[in-house]
Image (cartoon, helix red, strand yellow):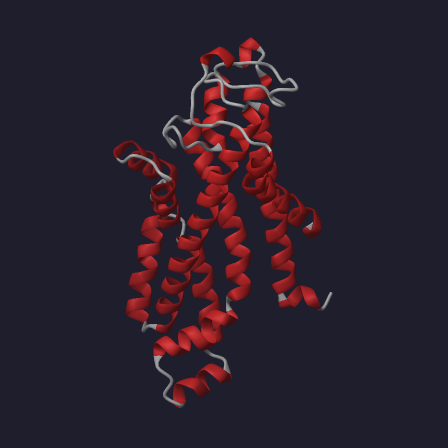
Length: 266
């Protein structure tokens, strides 16, 4: 499964970022004369309602979806790792307060907040990444918190404390490296979740605005033409979302198996 996952992810990375260099299309100028054309030699996956080549649109949408997914995952994992580590190293009162903050964030409907912010501000790759990452760090925080609670009782951590190692150095040098397995596994799932979140927002009509586009926007725009039989406006984008998320889940499962000490003895 890991090989399949990596192969699929590499394919979509090449498709989205290298593909436009090979299959050149105009994704900036609207051409209503070419609107909603079926697949042909000139347009391998047809055109959309604005006359844009659909295959080129998929490539551009893939760039945006993957960029937001990766950036949002980095934001979420970075915040969650630091928060969980600091909480676990603090005294019981501070630890309890910090983890209750995590509980409060977990109780807030994620998609509801993202939609409110998307309506309030003009969505962009940076803003959506920060919003999605800023409301997705709670799970990494809980996972890292649990790992650090175990690690802080280990002999090498006690020795580092006795030696007078500053807390920041203890975190960077000893604790974070020993939680990388959990962090890496969670990051793959965070990327998948972020891509789905972007698709949800785009499908509901609150995603990126022209000239930016993502796969969710393409699904939203294409759904109104389903009854007309314009399948190329819906299914390719849906397939890209599903296969990318599946690939990331395969990679996450493989990373979990590789980093789980208990599974190494089977």
